[in-house]
Length: 452
Image (cartoon, rainbow, N blue to C red; front, side, top):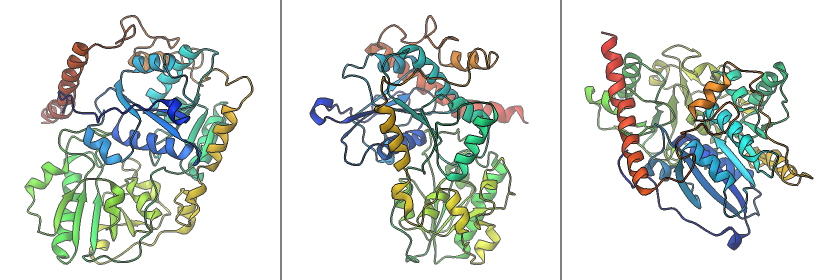
């Protein structure tokens, strides 16, 4: 994967003048965040407006493969891989004129680095509306992640519950909370569940890093296989995020594809990949530990179970579902239990099963329109973290993206002075492949040897 030149689909360039469209850029660092960023960009733009979408994929261990990009189902007008410094240069040397909207679909540290880098690059001049947010459920590092995202014009909250928490954090440290904007997860949708399929289909939505140890992952897999044996009339599917060798937002050191080799699953059990929405089209019971897929299923009224077998713990993320009515164990599911969600909990979590999803992004669209029409343009970006507020924290975050304390590229930063040539691109692909192999194959072995 890492050494192939075919990791990206063909780039399609459509002159902006030909469409007279709103121009939107999305910078993402993984398959999941590309999905969130690209779909959010679509939701945020006026329905009647033509939109040109340019995608930028931040180079790293989780840069998505062509298969992962196809699975998202969003087609960009152009798509290319960049370093952070290359992206900053692209934002200042855009040949077709500046973008209208920029979506930063990155981990918190990446967002903060780009905010400072963009502030330095744009200065007081014209700039697009900058938007950021979260891919799914926010169940850990709330304050850390939020303050790293502060400075964007819109910080999107996927529910009323999250919007309240976000504002409380910002106000609690004396930061401006006006950027917090309630929306919903951009990938909800699909036909509502109308009744059991033939055969009745149970889907376990696996997560790359939850749980994070072999014993617990083997336990969950064993219970899923046992459920298939107990119910031969059912189809039991293990929905996987990535194929061996691919990376997602989180590192998967113990993929289920390897663990299942120690099992002897029955004929009604199988592994599946692909778009979650298409899998939900045939699902009668969605089972997970804490995957965002639970919210997708609940939005469509698909019966959903959040497992309690390993406890209800912050480290698992299933504590987020307390009060949902969805918590259940494999013993209960084996006996035929089908959880019934709490309607008030659903409403607070932005799961708009009542049909209000169509208006979930209206406020955000209105705010973007107001900012684009702001007399005199937008002021410079103003993150909460500065050399005064976080002198022991911010420089390290910026340095990881080859930026100095002032947000400007450091001397010797990759491609800080010029675009990469063909030879440099080939070397980078080979280096990326070696790095990913080390992260996923070699490092886990070394860690396990250290535990012996």
